Image (tube, rainbow over all chains, first blue to last red; front, side, top):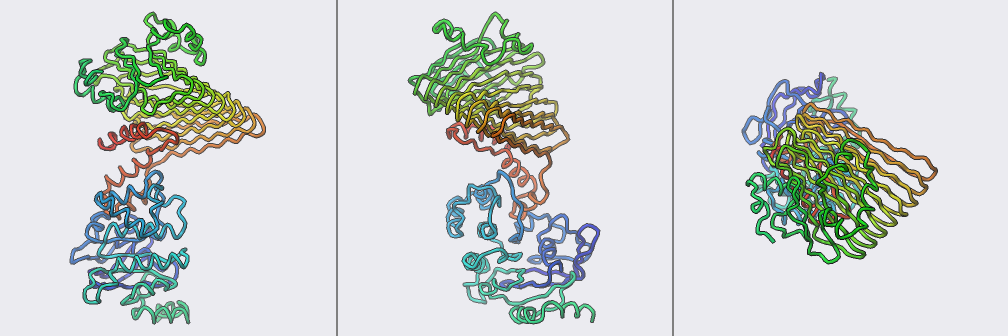
Length: 243
Length: 372
């Protein structure tokens, strides 16, 4: 579904990602780990197509189409969706109004999803204005439920969320990724950034990657990678670079 | 009642549409009363709501001698050349709306001031809400689309909000690029009275200058001014509002959303807290979409212990991350930008009847559909 080859990305004058290769097949969910500032969010923002992230080399293809230089909304229309870690506040724009617009005026569906995410009382609120950490995440997941992407990128879905909200958000993300469906029948794919791994309880992730200094350093079973990191930290990643 | 007002008046379809965009209901379906003035001719003065009277100022003076005591009481006759012009005019026009003690209207009274020629239209309006009454007015001011240089509107409005009374006044302007407009308004608000003044201008105009003042003389009186304006190239909007907090518990809120697409907006505001236990907040947010000028001059002045005044003003452009956030949800850049602007202009006014809030929203929707 998603193929990234030899990707180099600059933010401003600085190259942040170097030589990134990543392949995510249909129905697979991958987990991206790595220390703060290693380039994980940059990779997600680049896949989504944000203007500040300039691809200087390599290519990104999605559903066999080269999207390296496609505008953001066309990537969204092709089926890429993203849950932001720190989405902007938009004064005056009501959450409900945006959801109705992105759903193609399916008001009832929006109301139903909002209720499921305990966000029905927020539909008349300005997007993200005064939202708590958990409310921001619920709003992000709700927007993705309405958008129905085939490929879901999640930037630290569990950060700033209490335990009760984690189970609500985790279950909803599981639904987005069709985790209830049989392995062979899953069509939706995902790429998830996590530090704590709590979200893995809901995701049944297929593969994990560790990013260090803008490069993907190692791959493997996500739970085993997490166990290693928990035991030894990211020290080995740094050593990895030196080798 | 005429079937369709504008048609009866011989207006073209385009000019009828301009009236509709200014909040005038040509079929009177959602209005309880109406005052219509074409140039200097009074065309209609009527109201079906019990306890509310809509009269031309000429007929009001004939009917009630005491009306003269309400004239030039809040706006001084010799304030400037425009007030003097109206005071000295031989053909005095304008409306008087009186809400008697305890009366109220759910459907608003509409006041339509239509300018169809290159001359000065002038009005003197007196609006009185007696004790415990609630009066809602939508004032649609428009000119014919072909009215050129020399067309001008001078309007004096004096509002009297009695004890426990409420007036909401929603003014929507649809002038033309050659028209000069000089409203001169003031309000006096007594104990527990509420005055809501809303202003919407989404269309080109050559020049508008106004600075209405609310005198909050009664305890716990409230004034709220809300303005939503767009300045197109060649438009010069010099707008302000002032609240004088003169009684314990009085409060005022002055909110402006201003967008320039190449025109000039001067957004003034002044809150004077001269009594303890008063509160005031002034907020001006401006967006510069194309090179133009937004000059915000917020003034807060407290001269006694126990008045709390604040202001916030911001002028800038639409943040790139907001546009891209909406694009990531599938909106193209143009729709994302329009959605953010629409949100920026979305001012919900507490205490305003739904029908009037919808009228304000509709005026902004027209601008959105035209691509702002």
